[in-house]
Length: 398
Image 1 (tube, rainbow, N blue to C red):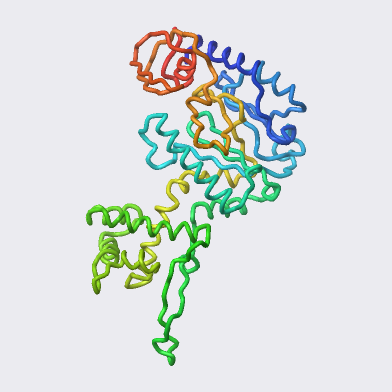
Image 2: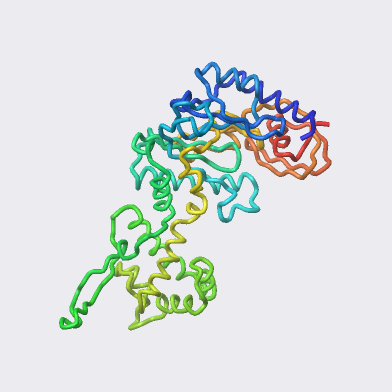
């Protein structure tokens, strides 16, 4: 941004902060705060506040470009790191479009919809269902930029160290899944009592919850989907998703879709609820690797492990403005999750016209209206469009 643009945007940020309160987190006086201003000099930290009035006064005066607080609580939050004295930390998840497969190249609004689907799975399927966290201890915020944050403040997680937090991420991402545990063997006969050889059957457990149900439902869903695809497309997908060679992929296809005694392996999976239709455990495990990758979807790539396992992480302050979009870091009501639209609900500026000159093309749907601008075009636009374009660096005030 040029100097005129910076002055205008900073002034509008200051006006917003003078009339809107930051959503203060629990124990805000025990957290470190950090800020980027408009001078390009990097992050300013540590900052600490003693009372809520100090927070509002600071934001109104400084109009920060970006605002953060620590997930951690400290005895002395304003001190250098070695002297802070760590007291505990929220469990924080960051789902960002930069790492979501399939988001690259999407329009901004489409990208946000894709990321929203992933945070929904994380919160409802894993945090609240599998881990059993109460809704009152789980908060979700649109980041103001390209993703969402989930904060877990259940007292049981506040004292967890990095290793324990990493285990939570491992569970969510399906890392280290034990297939023999999820699909246990049941002895149904004896092939050789002398040598202790048994006839085994591997069924898919029903109504077991967690990864048990997730994998079982994934197997059924994928088998039915693959059955509708062309052979060459299935082979290619096996190779791409499971990272296997063409020969192994062909063997998987044969085990699933080649008829034996008038019945395909895929039919046995669906009708008999069994998984042992493969000629050996190696091939079965490759198939389950494929299922795991499909089931965990984009969550694995998106659950930013360094953010979650870091017990001293900085996270964007709810109620603050994102300096690269002008959008607000906005709370998402869990009871009305599907209704949240960041390009409606996180837009804080009004309709008054502002003249700007575009330095890049921009196509955006915001506040329910589609806009399209060309590089070099000068025009009057609603302020909420102008602020978005200026902060994105695709327009200037001349």
